[in-house]
Amino acid sequence: MRDATRLAGGEILVVNSGTAEVRIYDDATGELVRSFGRSGSGPGEFQGPDWVAVRGDTVFVFDPFQDNGRLSAFDTPGRFISSSRIALDGPVVFPDDMLDDGMLIGTRSEGSIGPGEVGYVKYTRATIRFPRDGTRVDTIAVTASGESFRERMGNGIAQWGIPFGTAPQLAHHGDRILLGNGDGFIVDVFDVDGRHLRSIRIDQPETRVTDAMVSRWIEHQLSNPFYEQNPDAAARTRRRLEATPAAATQPAYDRLIADDAGRVWVRVYARPWDSTSTWNVLDADGRWLEQVRLPGDLDVVEIGADYVLGTATDDLGVEYVRLHRIETRR
Amino acid sequence: MRPSMTLLLVIPLAACAADARDAAYTVADSAGVAIVVNTAPALAEPVTVVDTVPSLVIGTMTDDPSSCTGCAMRRGSPAGRSSS
Image (cartoon, rainbow over all chains, first blue to last red; front, top):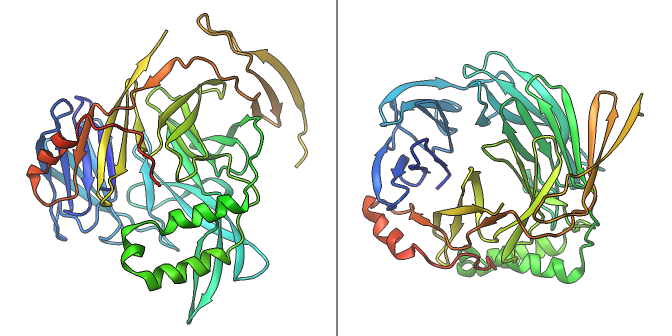
């Protein structure tokens, strides 16, 4: 499962990379209504569909494993319309999503800040906008990104995230692009032409990272079926993580979503073992409205007027899609 | 870069009729960029409540299109399990 969205009629569209197809389910019964696409390299076929965007009656599916990035268009019944090869000049940049005007948005690493090529590094990124044929690229903003730790390994360099490290966040609504990385409760808002419109902040205290938190974080990274079945790999990863310096403070937030109405949902940093997550909800101008709690295991992909759509993983490591109702009390 | 001009407005958050909050925000204009600062939000009775029990669950990882049999089994299962 890679992505999901709700169609105008309420049906749930799911991108299933495992079977290389798009499936559409009835939102009342959960029954499979129809599916389209299949494994292959021909028109309307996928090798690893990644994300979906619905614009009007057209469903766009991006597949990074074909043609250096292929965007395929279908009508909502599932009939193939066309495909575009995304071929940006220079370093390959995969689009992360499609803007309302049909342009694509993606990020390109701009460089790193650190004492050397190994050890702790902090990244900057350029958020870019480009058309479906990749002929022109506009830079919307260059901002701080995530942080990681690098180590020489054989002839290459391995890198991994540091405990409680920041990570880049990107959301959009209409012509507004929201960027941040959780280094402080700051969300920067740009328009699609790169004008910095506002910087939204919430004044809240930092949470210092303790040794006990780092130990639990490492245990959580190792608590999955792969490491349980591969003790040698688990031991190597444990040594590596224990030698990685953790962040001094927790990120202020770790998810950023714009809902259908343009409200901004910002998840207060959720430790991996937290059973609920707390989201600060702000209006489109950045004014704080309220805090909303969601199940901690729900990885939110979309928020509508009366629903939250997300994925979760069951005890066997199988991903599934969940729809939760929103009730408004006024 | 230092801001070339700072215009500070202090605007109290309009109190909701149902639950007054102490939260406030300020807007400062810094070289054309609005800096919106919200004070630490006061916890109040939420206006928006998300049902912890999902209204729909869809399993998608099997090749079998009838995997929704599993969906029906999962439907209504309690949400909010710890991921640890």
